[in-house]
Image (tube, rainbow, N blue to C red; front, side, top):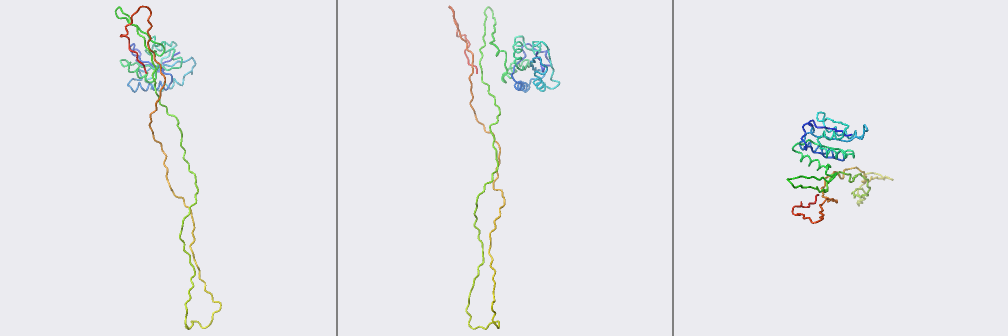
Length: 284
């Protein structure tokens, strides 16, 4: 069963062929598409989103609630039907497109549509630039038009193109820590000490100041010196700043892409006007 999570308030006014549609394989892709359409000026009231349920009540409830949160209450309406094609027709899709998208939805896709009016080509470009799939991915489309008495058949040639995305990943980390390193230092410090100096001077017959001998007389001289005392005091010797900067570089990426070319097989006596052939062109 398909459910349209958000439905346009103007479904009754949809002009046939004015609905742009894109199928996305993941919820983030669908979110980016809705944001891009809104940024381009398309009203959220004209944007529809459809997801498929396998019959279980909570089969994709998380995705459904996430999609609902992208729309305000006055922008959001829901359309639920037991007929899958009825839901897709309600979104403005034609029968051929609806059949393809119905099958794709059951493979886990999310369908985003927009009632674009005269801006259908612009809306298609936005959806497909963000990785949407369309009916041309499911089968080679062939159309035929008749002009007068001459029928012209057209074959679409498909090609692959590279799409490049950038993801931010963890590249590494740098940890800074302090270690204590012990080293031996020597400093020369001048110090002063006192020494005894004895001087003798001859005296010739001068009268003594004292009248008697003083046996055992002693004179004491105290000597001093400077001694070095070492103390350690922490000081700031350096400051380290750590930060990040953006460095831009160019990387070359590539991949193998396929494209279709036309092959002409002639049987019998037929003439082929190769001048009228459409030139072969590699896509991507």
